[in-house]
Each structure stands twice: as C-alpha cells, then as structure tokens.
Image 1 (tube, helix red, strand yellow):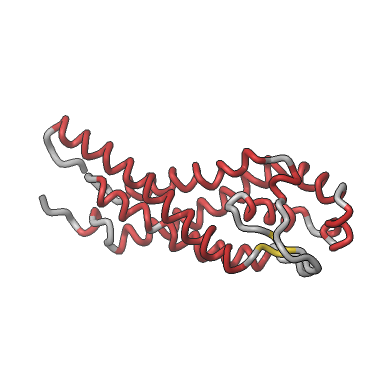
Image 2: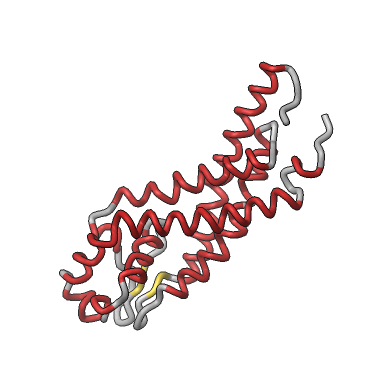
Length: 194
C-alpha cells in the first residue's frame, strides 16, 4: 500500500507536527508542574538552610519550579558551591511529578502519529520520535532561563536526558501504540484509514 506524502512518518508535515507538539508538550508539562507544585517548592526552598544560603530563597517562583520540572526528568540541579545535584522533587515532596513528563510525552507521540495518519506500528514509532525536535530545543532554552545565581539544571543532562532520551523513548511508545491501534482498525474495517 502506498502512502501519500502527508502520511509518511518522515514527511515534512510529520516533522512539523512533531516540532509543534514537542514544544507544546514541554510548555504544558512546565505549566502542570507550576500549577501542582509551586507552593510546595516555595516551602521546601524557604525551609532549607542550604538552599537559602545558596540564594535559592530569593529566586522567582517560576525559576524554582523550573528546577523541579527538570528534576522530574531526572536532570539534577546544581548549587553554585556544592558538587552533586539537589533533588528538588524529593525536597518538595512532589514525587508524582516524575510521571508528568512520561505521560505527556507518550500522549504527544500518539498525537503526532494520529495527525500523520500512520497505519502501522513502525510508522507510528517514527512519527512519535519527531517530538524530540521541539522538546530538545525548549529543554536547552528552558535550562538556561531557569538559572539563578549559579543554581541551574545540569545543561548537558538537560539536553541529553530531558531533550533527547525522554521524548525519543516516550514519543516512540505513544506513536507506536497509535500505529498498532490504527493497524488493527484497518484490519477490522478492511480498508485504508484516512
């Protein structure tokens, strides 16, 4: 069965869908983190002498939430005077946030596969991978923007883990699932899906 250009997983339209959905899901993930964790993050930062001494207590709330957002991707946040990473998710008691990037990125991969009208698992995986384009860009920019007096997410880990590993793995899963569902539906109906 031949596919039209807009349904090919590597087609220009799919790459554009992937980039836009990747950027959108990054922003949505940050907003969900902000909405659910801002007060807990503030309490954790204000109540921790080590963080207060490092200047974190005077950070704008949106930057402190950014540290948690990156920690939810397993990207550590460094203090200027300490080696190693601070676990802002654990300090804030918002461990449920570890699920937010995973679930949103799986859904995002599925959305791209759906928009690309894939009809088999392989094409779905390939379409889902494209969310990494936009997500990587914003993961790097975001890590730079949430820096404050030397407190910042590890930039290399932000690029590799948050920007590549998470969206590639989760996007592939979501896209592959949509590909499987659409392939099953095509077999049941017996005709190509539009």
